[in-house]
Amino acid sequence: MTNLIADDNIIKKTLNSSKVVAMVGVSSIKKEDSKNLVRRPSIIVMNYLQEFGYKVIPVNPFAAGKKINGEIVFEKLEDISEPIDIVNVFRPSGETPPIAEQTIKIGAKVFWLQYGIKNEEAKKIVESKNIVYIENKCIKQEYQRLFLKVNPVFPALKK
Image (tube, rainbow, N blue to C red; front, side, top):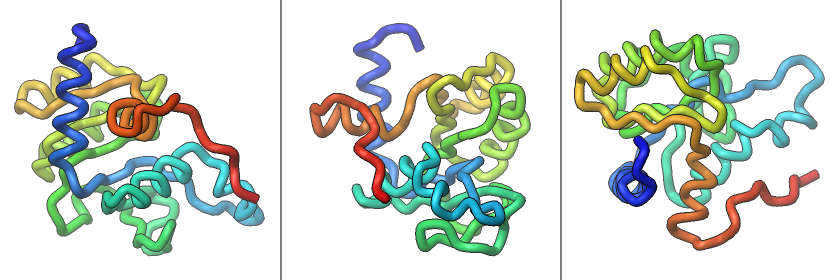
């Protein structure tokens, strides 16, 4: 997407019409990391989306079956039984093509790559099936900017 007005319209429509987000790569607790978990970008974004009424389903093969922010973690997208509107990705760019393929399999409407993540192959994969592709944008920051009209920065971290 290159036209900013078109981008904003697509993002606004996406966020308005979506209810369930599968978050791939959400951070999990590793040994004594529980104090630092709340400071992880994926956890901040997950918590924020939950506060604004989205159901966020965490996907992390290393934490499958555990709970993060009150939601059971799934190993992979295909394990989720309910319909997913947005697949939101917190993984390196090179890992996104297989996630794009999984997005098609589960019938999600949007493939959203977080800030700093882009991949042309993944883009071609999802756009070939008319799935909306958004790259290099933080879903939390876009929500803040478009709906709350606030400077899209992370809030002070809780202790």
